[in-house]
Amino acid sequence: MLNAELAALFGKHSLAMRFFGSAILFSGSGGFKNDQALVYERFGEYNLKQGNVNEAKYGLEQAIQLYEAWGAHGKVNLIKQKHILLLAPPVEINVSIDE
Image (cartoon, rainbow, N blue to C red; front, side, top):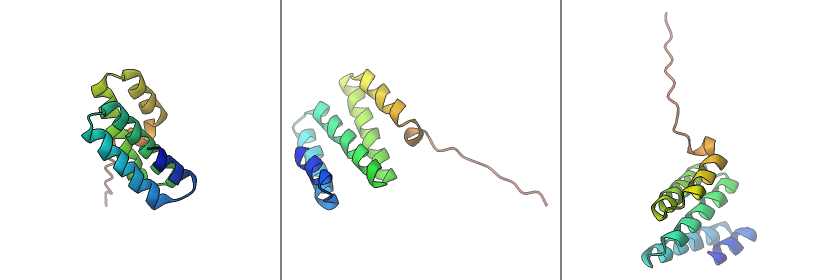
């Protein structure tokens, strides 16, 4: 994850994404769910700064699931509060035009 953060800091987007992906896979395969949650959270935050809303939302949702499974409910609440608009379900708008 440190390599991903450093690549992001120096503006190396493709390298940062590759390192985030590796850190997610490594921590998950090692059973380190708490670490994997943190990597997903940082991945989501990074993508949000880059304007990649779908990737950001995915990362934060994965982090929330992992934090919940780990029992870190306070952390889940903080993420949900910080990103309330991003994580809110889409609103369906029905418009009918009468002739």
